[in-house]
Image (cartoon, rainbow, N blue to C red; front, side, top):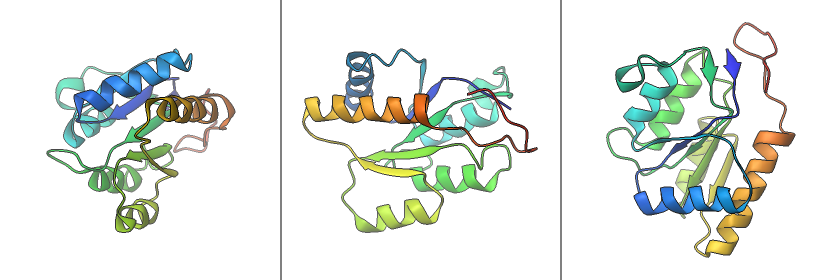
Length: 154
């Protein structure tokens, strides 16, 4: 498995997608952002099925930013499947949601989320949160070894 500097943003709200992309741009995060608009599309991307069947299965995103309230397959089920599969179980997953429900927080961590971030309402706060996310997950974080134990470029 080869880690790239791709971020997989799993978000169904077009306004939140635009806001996130603008926040990354303002934060000087130039990484490629792949957007999946529902949980099924996110799984298709990760496992190279459906519309993403021609994607190289060896290239995985550096981090997944996952909303919880998604059509087709919700975020918690996406997280459950990611953690259940040896190909993706070590992939960093950051839950990025507007949910204020404590049960969502607890369930996310119980299912193996690496981080849980509530989306700030204020744009300048969101830009700052995006900057910190990018700095930490794309620059500072040391990626876990691949499923076979080999270190991958990150």
